[in-house]
Length: 421
Image (tube, rainbow, N blue to C red):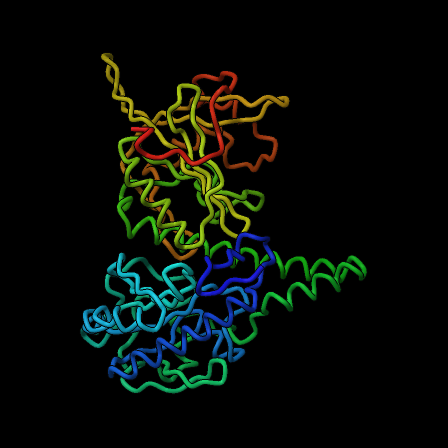
């Protein structure tokens, strides 16, 4: 099954962890890159190829095999000029999405949302900064959100699908210092990794192990890309400042500075009062390639969670109620519910953790909001030995759990917001 401008796009990133972009999507993204370049050139608007698109052009002369969009950089001062070209874009059969003021997205069509993203930068005091600035530096680089303006005073040509595109100059120094790292030329593509993994599976164990490690490194890279995208969508929309991570993601980062190797999800808690913002965030994530899997209604019919997925990694929202201190005093708590499987039976358990001011943890090149006193929260959730990894940890016996009961609620289909308010 292939896609065209008349159909919805292929969601190839949801098929399996080893996905590569199909030819139908490659063809449309190539044509879209050519169209955007022609459009901006014809109106004298300065622009340059950036991020993964620039890396693919330099390394292979084509988009990275698993990339799902095209990235350009432009000046913020040209935003209104570009936005005014929406009619010209429509006449060509494409569609300009202006819902996010941080980026203009030009889609293959109003039906097919394969797209080129135009990111906007402002030059001030010898630096070029993303406007609005959306996060701190990526690990191993001097800054993905700020770089010296000298790099775009004179642009140089790079080749993408046999065609010349403008890029920051000197481009190799730019990519090595401000986008990826000095090893960017050696990064394997998906096909190479898969071929090596198949070859390794047919050889002795001593040869399989390094190939498996290489694939794991690549999988972590892909996961971190998705984490950055997830963070940026939440932080640039109506849910900004209203969410925080907790649970296993905080445990791994606090314990070792990285996510737990066997953890395949990230847990986010949101207050029930912020459901409208959460639903809009889920819609925005859907536009960015995150797939809705199911939601969870509690035994009382209230929404308790939403489960999304992207490229084999889960993103779970927990809906919590803020419980005020009792008459005897104390602190406010977050009360949330989750489903657990015990001896083949699905149970609904209620947990409570103190409601705290926000702190932040670094991961995947972003600052993740979390509780300020993370160690106290982790001790409550995982016990005093939380620093010691434990694959057999039993959540139902954890100190934060206040009630456990058989689950009789509903899970699966999307529930409209108006039915929950």
